[in-house]
Image 1 (spheres, rainbow, N blue to C red):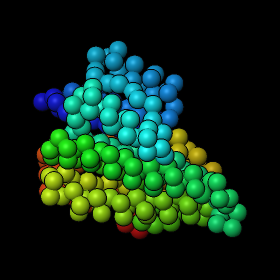
Image 2: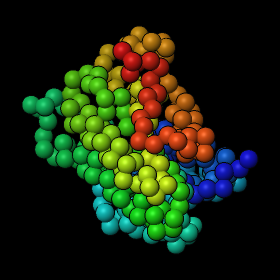
Image 3: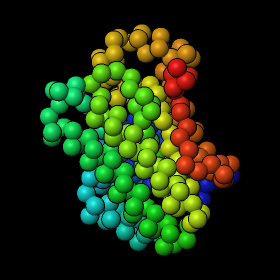
Length: 250
């Protein structure tokens, strides 16, 4: 049965975000992709449109409240409201604490923490205004719960903050009928994962650390995101689902 819903995916033109955008579109949803890279965003949205799916792209820097407000206003104007959101946009990077400069630290927090807060703030305002019993899923990381290797202090701290925002928002919006959860992916085959290989060893290192013996796929994350948005997860709220092949259990 087609999903007759409007879905926002931030950072929805690459990696996990692109997988979620594509799968929601294939399921019949109207998908809005947002992000900083206009060229890539328009390209991926056009690919989905050419396949006959409903998709649009709005350039947005989630570090800016004005841009996030403009994004939500465009969604309201063009689509009426918003049913689901996948807050996927974020950046990696980092250094050892004593080597990291202030600019890099603040950029990570402005994107991963402030940006997430701004998205939640304005998504919830629209859903509450329109009395939508919606679902929001935040993309965290295993770093939201454990430190995997040195040099990720700022990134891990930003994801720990994202975990707190997820739980706080879930409690605050529960009586509005809006559910807020998060996924916490372990090593998933994306560009960010391939960059992490350089920090932790070589291509064989990650699979050896994961009980399942392999890295995950973007589809495996997308399936959980779509489930969390569905009625099948109607009593799931304020939770974090680890998608790590057993890595989070170690």
